[in-house]
Amino acid sequence: MPVLNIRHCFSLEVLELECGSKYFSPDKRRELTWFTTQILRWSKGNSRTDLPWQQHPSPYRVWVSEIMLQQTQVATVVNYFDRFIEQFPDVFALQRASQEEVLAAWHGLGYYRRALNLHRTADLIVRECSGKFPKTVSELCSLPGIGRSTASSIVAAVWNEPATILDANVRRVLSRFHGVNGPDDTQITELEMWKLAESHTSEKNARNYNQAIMDFGALWCKVSNPKCNECPLGSNCVAYQTSQVSSFPAKKRSSPLQCKTIRPCVVFDQRFDCLLRQRESSGTYASMWDTLEVGNRVQPQAFLLQMNLPTDNVCLFDSVHTNRYQISNQQVTEKLTVAKYNIPAKTLGTPWNTRWTPFQSLKNVGLSVRTMQRIQLAKSLLETK
Image 1 (tube, rainbow, N blue to C red):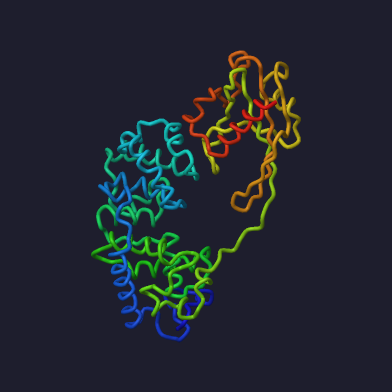
Image 2 (cartoon, helix red, strand yellow):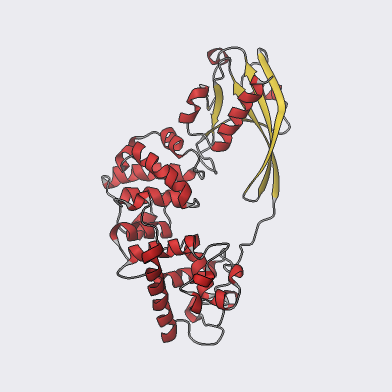
């Protein structure tokens, strides 16, 4: 069984199998139809039908679920979805909410830009569309945080339109079945995967097919320990027939690991009100509140002066705790500084782009999990000294 060698193809118009036959030959088209049929048959006894967003699948509920599911596993999203919908039952409620309220509701899901995009999109839909969701892939793609696959998933799930999806689960299934061995991060592989995904999408039953192939990838054709011996696609699966399942899809080319040291500074007043700064409007934690950060070559006392904070009436602990973790290709070393004043915040003043927040109210601000853990650790360290 031939493996589709993407690396040697220069034009999608002349893509050929290595055996020399034209790409979508009559036999290949029959294989594509067979694939779709097998996926739909498998789904009848295996697909998930009890997920909360599948009940009453309105455009709003499906959209919220799709954004939550970006880079997050279903099991995690299930724990957040109902709470989020209870707090923001429709697009109007979400639009009326403050950015802080939305971020606080998102706390723990990570990739917080998704929450900001939800809020921005809700505002656009209410102001420009009177609260009605666009019904086409192209219109949805014009909204913040919605790409082609997410838009397709929405229109198929809500209106059963024949729209093609290509998430990580679908990529894995198609890559193994067709033997696509090009790296995922190259344009030609991306275009070819979309071409294959489109060729399988059911014209009349896209809603069920899209859910079925996502579930098949998540539950059957898994990253590790796939159920190949029980797979309904096994007889025609290139990866299985050539004993190369673990080789598909090809691994992305990894970036070299970069080392970075940061020095967060948790500042408390007399009552453990915490001084927070708002991040810039770009980046991973755009517009979110965070602790202060000391420059790597700046002494803590000098930093307090830079922030227009006094250096008396304060207990200062420099590099009191070290934490190491990895984010993407960055190895981060975090050296924690803690400053505890014995006077109230109103006496200290509020530096530019900061705010004092009572400790018990931090959960309502929309901090990242890492920031919240850092503040809790700082308070615990002070209480033991």
